[in-house]
Amino acid sequence: MNTLTANGKKALLAKLGSRWVLVFIVLELVFFSLSTTGFLSIDTAQMILFYGTEVFLLGTAELFVIITGGIDLSVGFVMGFATVIASKLMATFVNLGLSPLESVLASSILTLLIGLLPGLMNGWLVARLKVPAFIATFSMLGITRGFSELLLAGSPAKNLPALAGNIGNGYLLFITKRGGISFFNRPEVPRGEYVWAIVPVIVVLGFVFIAVFAFILNRTKFGQHIYAIGGNKEAAERAGINVRRDLIKVYMISSLFASLAGLAYTFKYITGKADAGSGMLLNGIAAVVIGGASMNGGSGSVWRTVLGCLVIAILETGLRIMNLQTFTTYIVIGFILIMAVIVDQLFLNSKRAEG
Image: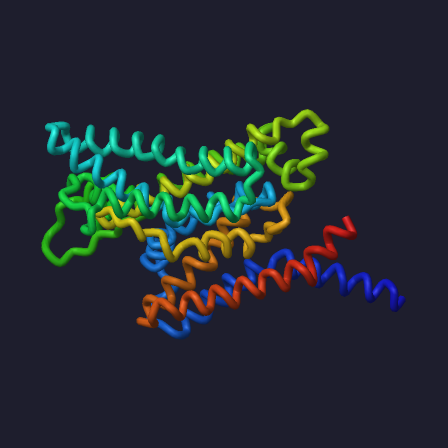
């Protein structure tokens, strides 16, 4: 009887440990709803997603690398590099006479293509030359930051087309008090009449990419290869997996999502800054760990990482509403990260061992 009770307790603790992120999200919502006015509302939910877009994208970027047992320290400044490239290209294309739509589309595509280069270099250094991921990506951090500062020449990028801001700060759906519905364009209403804006466009675009790569990770051979590499690189090679090629792809995916985060920032704030993502590296890595991925590689999920990102996004939005300074967020995220590691060690590792 005592053995059964002990086993039952272990099973219960493991179950709670595997779902602690959901419990923590509920506790966050309760805390901020009691500490602020109107926190539990559609407007606040959209604010959380809107301001957290870059975190969701950078978390996904880190996840792919961490599953292989690596790390990418360059994502924050690759994001900043992307904001500079995108903003400079948009302003240049407008000056050349292209329409705002053509300028935004061409700049976005070119930014994503150029944004693959840091990942290609990181992957080549790690996979081909066996440079430790920490050193390779830390070096790329400095390179992308230097190029960004060089292109900006000391001043933020300006003169972007208004369409970029309309996309970054636009909404998918508008509903008027009288029941009128409008897509993308805010309807004309009498002065003082409230219009409900539903689902930020930039959030939809970001989650389209996240969903596509969640499918790739979960449903394709390439996704299976990523987990195999993180579990045991030598065994993956013996199984016929082209580890070098797949590692390069993984680091390119990381840079792709960092570049997407840079585009999101550019559209939202209508500018480019070399340090736009300098403070977001911690958030990206923390989201992956909070989401249950092991830093040793071999485990992790896109949607659990999204939950980890949500923990951080709720925290940042709640503290912003409470008018607390930015350093408070860093302190709290640091404690949550420590707690996530402790939970992993106490509960999840024992569960994996039993499995």
